[in-house]
Length: 100
Image 1 (cartoon, rainbow, N blue to C red):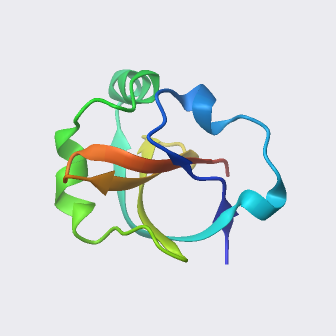
Image 2: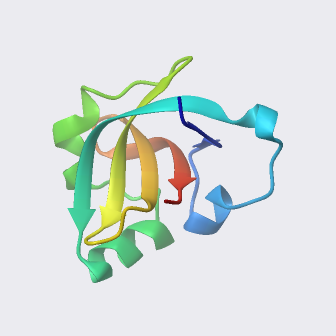
């Protein structure tokens, strides 16, 4: 199973890319994906704490736990992106950077 370093309520992409111990990574399962335009993706990664309507449809499928069930938010035509566990339907509670 794949693992990633999840951060509680990160503000920007840089919060997800900080050095960490491998033991701090958690297993995850991608339950849904959203592909954004380049502009929308840049807007998202520079302010992860803003409410985002595109998180709502998958929010009920996601959950924090031993295995993080998350939504992959990525730029179109790019497999890398942000693993998100939403809170209150459209707010990022947990997130991790996933690089392909």
